[in-house]
Image (cartoon, rainbow, N blue to C red; front, top):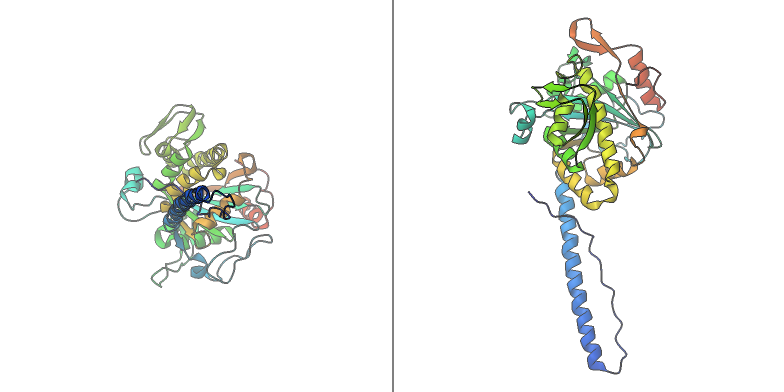
Length: 375
């Protein structure tokens, strides 16, 4: 479906003082021409302004917001020494100030034909296929991305549900089960229990939204050191450098049987490479200085986004993006939470201590990561 493109807001044509030329008829004709042109210009600008307003409304109302603050109340970690403090309302602190931590999930939602076609499975249920804690430093000049393997066994706390009930607490549950049983609220609460880090914001994107995002950016360039042949994710790449479109990039982010030992850890390394490739592409197309391109990207992803109520409007997302423009690929560090094989299951992992705690402490205090954890 083709959307209307945003145009500049309505303005006012400058007025004209009455003419003083002695040839009154000529001045009156000229005045009528200027008046007619002014009215026409005003109508064009007014229509354009309405179109821009409708376009903004269209994008703004496609973002799904979840009031995580109200759902979790005070049962959460405190903010760090430089983090933006939350207000007492349902909205979180302004996105433009202070250090912040954002829980970013990639959901394998089964809803909609687009998601099912891209590998979302049947029509019921969803899991957090990818989980990352993104830490933005106080100056908004650096970012640290810490991936949490979805197969990590964790304590999943009891979480409130939208119906007014609660989910059952569980020990030794897979991290991605939190989203399955309690949605974004339980995903945030479980992440906070695991890390001791307050999640200031939450962003979730589904399969189709991710693929559309990559396509709207013009694709991304990645490099593989080995051939990837994964029939389950439908990805087949020879070793080397490749420019991927949306569907291939999604497969690249999801593949694990064709890389490493087939575990989630190998896939995470590909995902982190993909994040840097996306950031590089954003910089190369000067996204925030091109209104047309920015609209195209926003149109591609807003219908696939779920956020907390502090980011559930186009203006808030734009504010976040504008304030993170200084962060390039050289200013982004990507790591995986230190883990070891779970004693109870060779196919699962648990946090490796004390290394994992040191990583989360660095995020809480907005300090450098400990040596030896960077991928």
